[in-house]
Image 1 (spheres, rainbow, N blue to C red):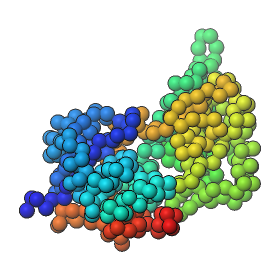
Image 2 (image 1 turned 135 degrees about the horizontal axis):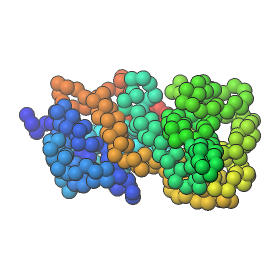
Image 3 (image 1 turned 30 degrees about the horizontal axis):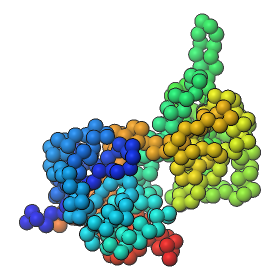
Image 4 (image 1 turned 90 degrees about the horizontal axis):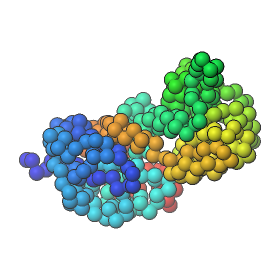
Length: 382
């Protein structure tokens, strides 16, 4: 019976300047092949260069009635969180998957609970080998690492590589990257490819090897005992360790042409890594990229969504970095979403089932059956 098919709805992203798309036509086709009915909002993929016709060819229905898509969908797939008003249009039992910022968006989570919607947060996908193919934070962060270096080069009044010219030798620029997680490692690789000298620091000394394998030099600062969580995130430092880190980085920051900070603490305000005092010590024309500008900033004086000049130093705080390369970002995010739906897909009944015994779903399902089921978020909200 065709009418019991699971209906997947994909509304357009409403955030200003957002060009990424949640599902690209190739993955739309896979979902249709799995037995779902797909409804996408007209103009969904235009920002990333995917036409409505490509979605139609993939077997989806294109509709310009956004409200109808939201009201009839059994599964809603998107990138950015919905408004509370839109949650009110969803039907009970619907599964909604997107970024949700659940540590901060308490009223949003309560609205999902009260509406009886099963909300899945893309930020909460566990960091395990099995879930790598759904880990959107990592897929988007690796692109961010690449983008941040390119944005820095466009503001730097120098070139990155060493160049021997008839008029003499141009010395290579130095790039200092703080935080060698997914974004940091990609930034190291990109700056290195462009011919820069690269130095990196991370509180987790275990990543020193990875930094060196990409051709970067690891800045040694003895902080005493630091570690990482079971998911591989850096553990917050003590005040004493924070002082040692800032002191140890100061000289390197002053000597660098580009500094990129990538320290984002999940669910908490990021640490300040570059003080205005350090910015004063930098060469005029130097560039800083603050990856965490949107969530509070690693750099004193950075402005979320803007590029500013402080004491002759350009500080880039754009945010939504992967949106600069929206076509590839969409391809990766879409694959992450498809793999997540596929993880819960029951091939016989042709529908997505939320099984709370499943280790991956356990981590990322926030509300289900009219309750907040994620322990961490439940304790936080109550």
